[in-house]
Amino acid sequence: MNSGQRQERRKRVDNLIVWAVFSCFLVLLDQYTKHLAVIHLKGQRPLVILQDVFELLYSENRGAAFGMLQGQQFFFFIIGILVLLAASYGMWRIPSWKDSHYCWLGFCIMLITAGAAGNMLDRVSQGYVVDFLYFVLIDFPIFNVADIYVTTATAVLLILLLFYYTEEDLEIFHLTPKVPKQSEDEYSIHGADTKR
Image 1 (cartoon, one colour):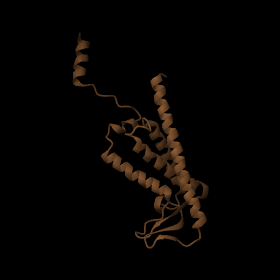
Image 2 (image 1 turned 180 degrees about the vertical axis):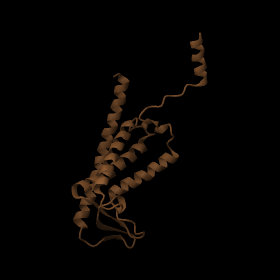
Image 3 (image 1 turned 90 degrees about the horizontal axis):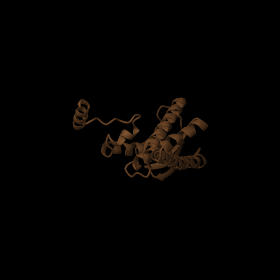
Image 4 (image 1 turned 30 degrees about the vertical axis):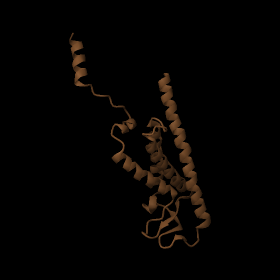
């Protein structure tokens, strides 16, 4: 392994370290808010923050984000593992977390990782996810901080893919790098050389 390869490998390891540290911080934040919800909201009346608009209401969710697909715990566990594996691969392939061109992509991956891990921890440890944020105004399904991570990251990622990143930018995620096509000029030169 030459110095260039070692430097590239070091950057990728740094990516994973930064990704893991920030993701763990976000997971801890999510778990702390759920802990507070259990202590202060479980078995209590809703805590009204803004009358007829927003309140804190304890709920045990045995489905996916926003209460969908109730009772499919094993399915969600497998999905969570796949998301974490995909996120690990994504952070490994990003050139550097310091690269301003890819930093937003890395940020989205960290949010998705934290959201998936936060809710997966709940499912593994207690068989359900604690939700406590409720928009009364639109009767939106009760959700939690981990759901905010995933929803925010998905929205930002969609905008990035539509308006910011090009197909060439995303080639870093290809399992096998593309071999550039030989131009006609190069072909004619090489062809002429072989004929001599």
